Length: 162
Length: 162
DNA sequence: TATTGTTATACTCTATAACTATA
DNA sequence: TATAGTTATAGAGTATAACAATA
Image 1 (cartoon, rainbow over the protein chains, first blue to last red):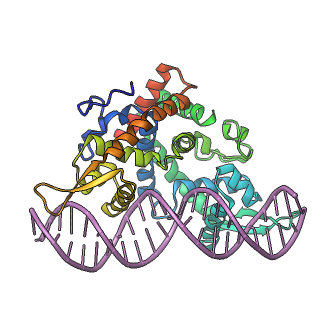
Image 2 (image 1 turned 90 degrees about the vertical axis):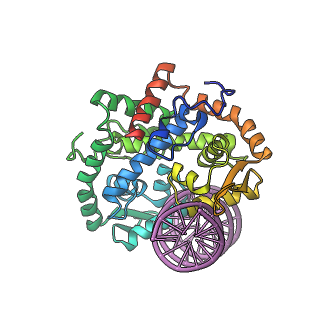
Image 3 (image 1 turned 45 degrees about the vertical axis):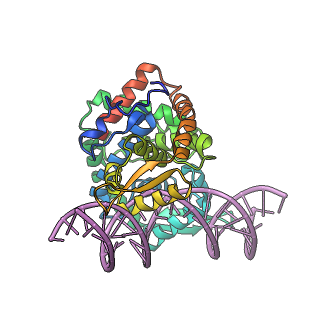
């Protein structure tokens, strides 16, 4: 791929044209960033069809799982772990608390901090979501062999971990 | 991976723990959706460090490229191509127009529609962003061989295209 | 002084619904 | 009737900055 390859006729690898509006995406289709974005959009849409009724997004699901496996974590600790600001996370926790999925308890030693826990309702919610998550995972990777699936997850992990 | 493997001690593959807050992510690290999300976050951050000063995001960049390669496209056509609502895209085009990157002209035959074009400033902007995009692409995939990079892009494309 | 959490503010992305102009 | 675009409204994610309480 070269930076000069910007002719309007350069649509050879434009696999997007088959289903969407049939428009050219130029050199985008050769970018990892672009295909990553497209894949994530596809996954998000599948996730929404099965878990949208529960009013949960992939990001929120990840938060609930982290609270489950790190019971008592502080908001700042959780915010750092997922890479968002404390103020952003605070509002998300507000919404979880309104839905009775997460509980803020007083931290035992640090009186400035909260300790976050799943409520029983939160635990149940996660438990009931689990089979849907695994079905979702199966469905979005059904076009790959087991080996390909492992390859993909390994490559993604290396990119994310660098 | 089994749905029952939810013990708090199940952190074997939790590569996230090394750099972030060192908290457990449970079974998340075995999900394609999770690793896809992490990889995209990493790419987004790298993109922002090189193109954030230009006040452009990956999504906006994709729109500008599509307008370049589909000069005269309508807002509805572009909205369908990227999978967002007309109202959402309209506001984005508003901002592009304020920045003089995109121009709304009257459609030649359909008087309800606009025809979208990059302005000269928009063309120049895209041209100057190009080398940064390719450097970004190189940087985020430097941990992969050429073959691995091709494998990854192919696997992502298959997931997105299904 | 530094940190935890909240609040105020702002911008973007996202969608739905109602509206107008036109097809 | 249907479509192109706008506007109003709403919710969520994102951030920065200032603040009170506490470490």
